[in-house]
Image (cartoon, rainbow, N blue to C red; front, side):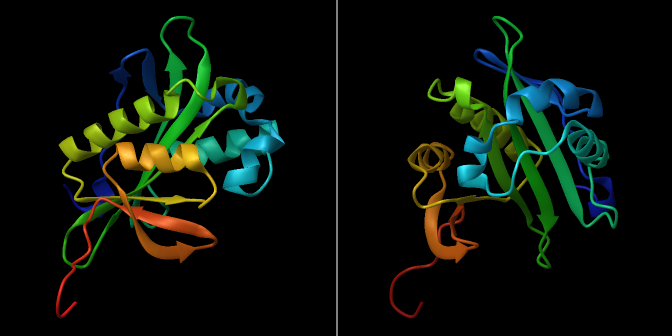
Length: 183
């Protein structure tokens, strides 16, 4: 992977019945309708953003990296191919460790009306496959211990719970921790 200032840019991905579209500020109006739901924030915290806040956030994320270049920001909108309906988002935040390995912190959000149809799993698996092709070494996710559906997505990605809890969420990782005597 290139220098952190040159993180990869999200590209369009087709996965089964979904198309992953790289996030653009222009998605904000359509995404607002999908994400303006307090029920989503039961698991992810916070509150729904206003249309203006969402548009400003998407403008920042569209840059593809943090202002200091230390993180790569990859965001996709999930759209059903059958009816072009926006159903959710997937994202990865890339960081380079001191040893040179690249870690991707993953997240997914599916609109309440579209949950239970496998969209999170399909979108997250497509994103993970794309990230592996970009030479990302470690995949991570933080999942609320009560959110069974997200735990299922993490498992489908080959992640395992680590026992580390951050802000009430369990860290899942593709990296198998050492085990056995002396560890």
